[in-house]
Every structure is written in C-alpha cells, then in structure tokens.
Length: 368
Figure 1 (cartoon, rainbow, N blue to C red):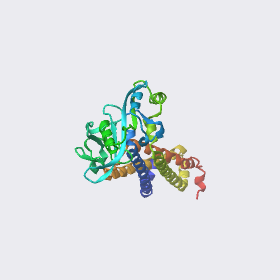
Figure 2 (tube, rainbow, N blue to C red; figure 1 turned 120 degrees about the vertical axis):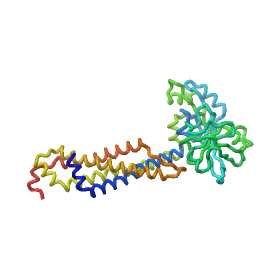
Figure 3 (cartoon, rainbow, N blue to C red; figure 1 turned 135 degrees about the vertical axis):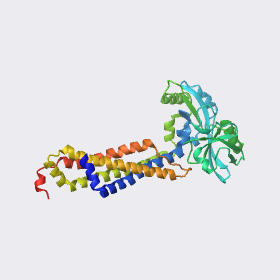
Figure 4 (spheres, one colour; figure 1 turned 120 degrees about the horizontal axis):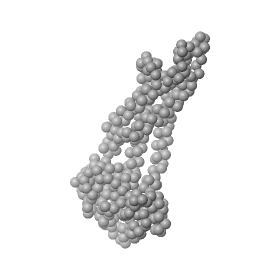
C-alpha cells in the first residue's frame, strides 16, 4: 500500500491526468443518469408519484392513460372488489392555458381530494377546492405560482393556484391538478354535446394485508372491460418510456464500459512498464501479494478521486440548471455509480495484478 502511494506522489502528472480523464467520464456517467431520471420524471411523474397503489384502465385503451375511457359506474364496481380499501376517479385532458405569458399546453388532471388518484405529496400550500388547482413546483418559473390564475381555453374558465406538488408532471408539459367536479365542468364546457364526461382511470388504495398484485387481479376478474395495473407497471406502459429508457441505458452502459477499460488499460500498461522494478523488488523479498496490493491501492485512490471530482462537476451543473428543468445530485446514484466504477476498474485491473503476481525474481538478473 505504501509503495503504491509513494509511486503516485512521484508521478503526480501521470496520475493527475488519469484522475482528470476519469473525472470527466464519471461526470458524463452521472450527468446522463441524472438527465435520464429528470426527463423520465417529467414524462411519468403524474403516474409514478400518484397516491394510488393500483390504476384501473379501460381494456380497450391498451394501457394508454389518454385513450382510456371509463363509465362512471366502473368506480362503484371497483370499490366493491375485496381488497380495495378506497377508490377514486381520475380524469385527464390536455388543453391550452394562459398564465400571463401567452397560451401554452397544459395537462389537467381531476381527482377527488381525500381519495386515491391525486398527487402523492403536496410540498407547499393546500388541497384544491372548486375552481382551484395544484401545480408542479418546477412550473413556477413559467408563471404557475401560488396565487396565480390559470385561464383555460377555449372555455375561458379559470383556476387559482393554491399549492405545489413535486415530481408530478405528465408528458413533460405543465401539469395542474383540480377537483374532479371542476375538471368535469371544464371538459363539459369544451364538449357541450357530450352525454357525460368519462373518467380516464380509477385509482385504488389496497387494503391492509392485501397485496397490490392480488388486488389488481381481483379487479380484472370482478369488473368487465377493465385492466388494473400496479403503479410501477402503469409507469412502464406510458408511451415512449421504454424507448427513452433503453436509449439512455445504452449510452450510460457504453460510458461505464469506457471508464472500466480506460482504468484497466492504464494500470496494465503502467505495470508492464515497471516489470523490471517489480522483479527487483521480488528479488529483494517483496511478496506477490504486497506488489498486487500496491497496484490495487493506486486503482482505489485514482477511482475515488475521479468519482469525487466527477460528483463535484455534477453538483456545479445542478447549481447552474434551470428551475424549469432542475437537476439534482442523487446521493444514492453517486454511491452506487462510484462503487460500480470502483468494482469494474478493479476487475479490469486484474490483468495488471496477475502480471505482477507472476513476476519471477530471476527476471531481475537478466531484465533489459
């Protein structure tokens, strides 16, 4: 261990350049993972952070929230299913809205306060009443601030913002949550000839002692024409999520492999260059374990410094990010990524360690 540290101190430039290169690669790895999580959160937050354990769709919708249409009678049928502690209606529509900065798209959700189906957490303000709404906090820079008035087009109806949610956007558009009665009034005003306003989903809270999967299966069996999904499955079923996830996973995976290959090859080349020195140390009595430990110490030191520097770069990028698309340092992501990079780099450096362990002391006498 001491030998490895002394070597690093003697070759500061060499190891400094490797640490810098590793820091940039780790930053890219963390940045891409954070960017992916933020983008997916903006697409799926309304479902992922919904208060319901199970979401009930119409079977004909093929798990598409916006295509799902449920008769109001489905709500009572779901409530009667064993294992259902509570159930609430969920409506969703996309329309144009104005908050003082011109018209823009707004994803509007309707839910019944006190029942499953609304946002899981209100971070500021209170539950909405008639003519009121919650909005995602990330939309505040776009004019959706508490106290602001949202004008809905083409009906001209208004909603007053009374609170903030977090991580509850849908389809990356500004998202508002109002009471189901207000929602139905807005939709009916835009479609005056419709006989009734259908619900898009029914949110279900699972009773204590029951499992999410068993309740979903019970709803499917008891209520005709519906498909019940656990919340995680509903998130994965949102159009575009699987392709975006696969794309980012591929990019992150390639970056991860590059980190491991760069670190492994560096130490392999470094070890080959110092075979004569290692052979001499073996001739003086140094064990293979001692020499291998010196290499692994260098790997651990360089990777730890690189991960720390990469995390600092991510923190800087997060501080400079826009409030409308906020990036944050996820401690769990940093720890898992750091351990994964350290482990993969150590594995990639096995060739270097094996080369050290196989050094024959007799080589010292004739090494060139």
